[in-house]
Every structure is written in C-alpha cells, then in structure tokens.
Length: 66
Image (cartoon, rainbow, N blue to C red):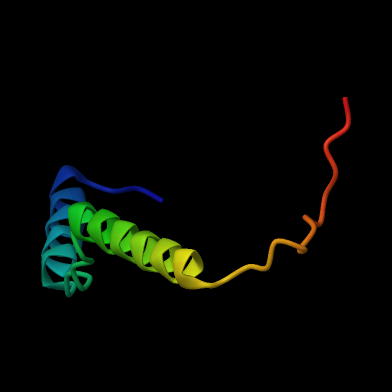
C-alpha cells in the first residue's frame, strides 16, 4: 500500500481529531482519599474487635513451637 505524505497527514489528522473527541474516563477518587478511607475502616474494625469480650479460657487457633 502506497501512502503519499498528504494522505498520511490526512489520516494522522483524522486520528488525532477522533482521539480528541473520545470521552475522558470518569475520574477516580484521589489516592489520598482512598488511603484515608482505608485507614478509617481499619481503625473502626480495630475498635470493634477491642470492644468484643473474649473469655480467658479461649485458646488461640495456633500453637507457638520453638
């Protein structure tokens, strides 16, 4: 296939114009907001676990072996 410089310029111009018309993807929340939300969830879960009473007779589900 032979392309002249003019045809190539026309194709490139049309591709560039089509790319400019493409809708931009919806913006995602900023990474800082994601990090803050994750930390808030972690603190809420830790508080809920700390508020749960655990009897002294409860044994762990694992054993420490030396």
